Amino acid sequence: MMTTAPMLSRVQKKGQVTIPASIRERLGIKEGDLVAFQETERGILIAPQEVVATDAFDRIGAVLQASGISLDDLIESGREIRGGIVRERYGLVAET
Image 1 (cartoon, rainbow, N blue to C red):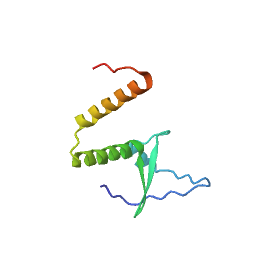
Image 2 (tube, rainbow, N blue to C red):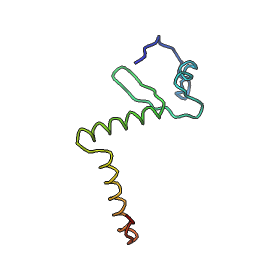
Image 3 (cartoon, helix red, strand yellow):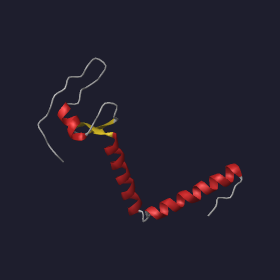
């Protein structure tokens, strides 16, 4: 993890804070992008939304792997569930 000197930004009237330009540029954060806020023991972590989603997928993958479930197993399970929904809602048999 990269550690840099702290940069300060003043909290505005509506709770808005400006992320310094050098940090936005380095992380590729542009106007309109989503950022996630996560409270940690040391403060608040602000990260581009894509990074947070990737981290969540990595954690899910680790749990599945620890449970002995492969990606192929997960995909096949999804197919079976979708097929059951199609049969239940529409009375159709999914093609195989």
